[in-house]
Amino acid sequence: MDQQQLRKLLAAVAQGEQDVESALHALRSLPFEAMDFVTLDHHRSLRWGFPEVVYCAGKTPEQVAAILARLAEHNPRVLATRANAEHYAAARALVPELQYASLARCIWLDREPQRVRHAGVVIAAAGTSDLPVLEEAMLTLDLMGHQPQRIVDIGVAGLHRLLPHVPTLQQANVVVVVAGMEGALASVVGGLTAAPVIAVPTSVGYGASFGGLAALLAMLNSCASGVAVVNIDNGYGAAC
Image 1 (cartoon, rainbow, N blue to C red):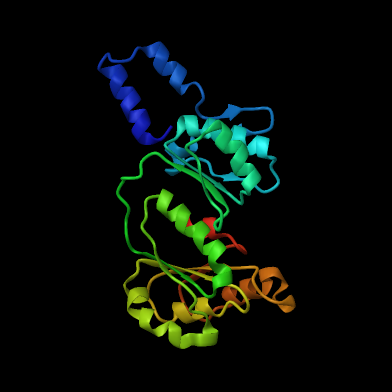
Image 2 (spheres, one colour):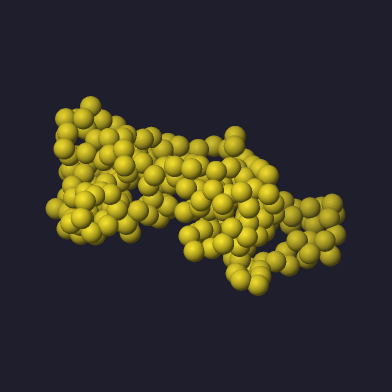
């Protein structure tokens, strides 16, 4: 239940359109709901502005399906990350409205597709191999009320590809930079714009990249001001 739903419920009670008992029934699952294998945080929309997001890795398809079914009963928008086709098939059997973004590896639901979205966020990916992380961030931002602009395949091995996009970077309110290998793109972008840069190291790269650790350390050691770093492959965290 988000703030808009709660406001409608309270207004209905105040105007005599809904009785107190039915309102209590609607509020009974706040602030959480204990199930056999999970405790759902239904209060998160009120507290944080977006419902609890499901991390699917390590969960069975049946667990993901049950969680998403309960969340979909309470919220107009739902998001699950690191989902596979089996997770989606089980969840869609319970909630047919659910959608699956295979590249982003996300299951999502949006019952308010016409809502206002805010511009100002730019997401830049160094290479095509970084696109799954970029897409996770793009979808998260869209569901959270933003209209991000993407710039792709502008890694430092061909730095001239970045130059036409400098005006866009300089006009942004915030830039998310997704890069693997040596992770240098975050420093380059950080030196070109006054906007805060949220750097996302990815696990893309050969052996000495150590699954994204090399990019993570490079981004943490950036000489550009205003660069913050999230965990490896964490497009969702960067979007938040």
